[in-house]
Length: 329
Image: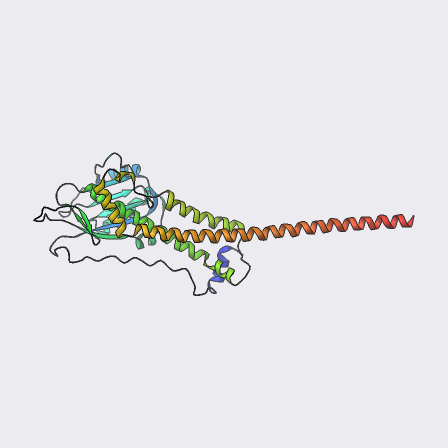
């Protein structure tokens, strides 16, 4: 019986004691801190694939002719910042494309976002399902601060609201916020992947609990172990979830904005919870692998015993035949 058939067979018998499902985080609504007469715009982040080919994407955008690349520091080779050539209102439409497969839109209408996401598919590696991409998007709001009587006009994040400096360029500050948002949506994709993985192994613990023989092969266990270790590798070794990107080491103001964004989106806490769940899944796979190995060793021992008994039987027959031949002579 295949793994999928076994899962379907057991699914109807699984008890209510299931792994707790991931609850979608509530978005913090706008507060009355800002004057209601001020203009607000939206920031929307998506993670659509494991990776983008930024060099080819730059060429593709040039051929398309709708966006122009904005200059960024030389040490930022993992991000592409573009602005729309044709301005609709006073606030520009911008996007930050991150090489790890995330994009953050600033003041880009929904219809234009979807057009860009469709355009991106040609430059993606291992694209995610569209339903998951849409479900796990992150949305925030921003406005420009007005200089107060005390002269304060700093970019900041207050109660989930991005307030940008109204004087000078804000490209790097928007990058810091975008970086945190991109990390959060990537983490959300991995959380959804783990949830799907947990659903695929729920039946195993139920079989173990009632003492039934687990209908799964060693190759299937090896495959499931590979899936969970691959996810752990992505989270802990191929992302910035556990440390701060090198770019911020000598830019304290940008680092503060980046960390505030990550804290607002609970990135550290979610990463810890995700790793705890992965550890549990790994322990289950190790237990299952050990059980199947023990069962395999028992079968081998029984086969060896059977072969020895057969050999002993032949020797007994051989001895009895010689004894009869000797007695007959």
